[in-house]
Length: 211
Ligand code: GRF
Image (cartoon, rainbow, N blue to C red):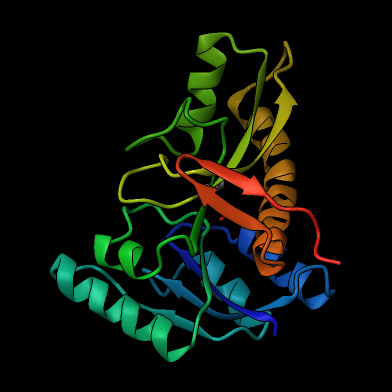
């Protein structure tokens, strides 16, 4: 059975990682289907892209809601869509603990650096890449990880590296990392769909292909 995937995005998300997952499902690389994209704001470019790709979208705004109410609305939408895997892609908030617990081991996120470096609250977009440049790192990359109740700390599934070039600005570095993000996220979701990810403490063991 193909897995049923929901993607969560925030107000300013471009949706390029979401699109990479949708496309990989459609060309059969991932045995799955993106059945729902949930955004926090209707104007999100990612939601517009999802609609253009004829994927079902919903807006669930946390504004004026308690954390509990927001969690309940998310859970209701995910359960109604019979979702197996939740992919955060440019989702800027901490996912409510009730959702993390209900979908333990079934929520992934992508971060544009090599965690556990350059992660945590407030570390997103330009800030991440600027910090990498200021630190003098010679490599950067991206990390796909399972989501726990804190920012960027869950077990790591896939990482990919890129070089930091002498002439890099944060924009050129971000663009080089983004190419790898799309591949890494598709790889992680594909492994999940194949039942090949086993969480053992802080480590994610990648099991051999089933024959
Ligand atoms: C990506 O850089 C991702 O690593 C981070 O947010 C950005 C989302 O980009 N979490 P996009 O919306 O997928 O294009």
